[in-house]
Length: 402
Ligand code: ADP
Image (tube, rainbow, N blue to C red; front, side, top):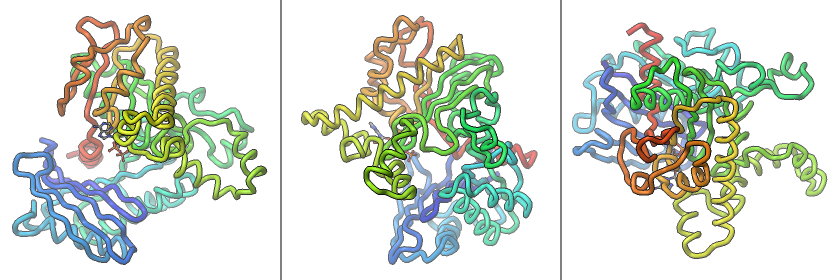
């Protein structure tokens, strides 16, 4: 059975066709710069496999529909295609960022669900309208395949009020739905389950701390297989330091910058989302570039690295405290999976908490779950590759009872 997974942004979308239940990715790709004079489509046939074929094309994609038409042509292409006919697509799973308190679980998308996703747009203005557009385009082009929405917020819906309520006037929660929602939920849920299976533990009694460190970064405290707390907030701007996002800062800074620099709310919002984080501190947001700069003695790059790691270490301590018993610490996503320096820095000096890493294991690379702590450590530290597309495909079929 083949499932098409779509992750749609405002001017780009990613897609993947997975063979289920094996979970094998048959093809994956990315359409970028939709609406620009020239856009690009990068398509991989059998991504990551020995027979991987990469194909790129540049052309204008005036809108998402045009991009999806090009993708559908490739999916059924004689050489690069993975299906003969669109009827082979059993379902389309869509990543939707914000489900709010109304859509707490993955669901089949009909008119009522589309309205709910649209109504939630004020809480996720950069994401939900784009996610909805992806659903509408897919429904128009592949009408026979049911569309399922899988929410970034779902995994965090189990947080208790003490974790999700902000100490601001309570009516802001009641009237404007101001609260912590959390994001990256499909990734946190996926790696937590993978880790329990790797350690041979029962997931329903598994406690862990998951660190999703990519361009966006977040952590979750998982108790008995359920999210107890997470670092992102009402929006993905909160919590850890990220590539271009500031993470937690004193909320008074907002008013101070507005008054001192005469910036508008929108300008400050852009500054905190796009010109802050690692980029704001040292000019680059790619962790690999930061390491190169550090090696060349760049003091700001060194500072950026330290600030980034310090935020993760503090959150690790906080989640250790609220969990009590921790069965594993898990690193995932681009930085979490690949950056041995960062993992070593975060875990340094935590031996008293039963957390330590083996430098030899930490420096190895392996595309599957593995332990990087010395044998017999009280709290195993794991690197678990995330696979949000697979998690979305599984959730999609679960909703459809397939
Ligand atoms: P996204 O959040 O966009 O999905 P990814 O999970 O792909 O992002 O993570 C992107 C981040 O991973 C970038 O900061 C990149 O520098 C970092 N990264 C990728 N490979 C490495 C590596 N070998 N060492 C350190 N950082 C890496």
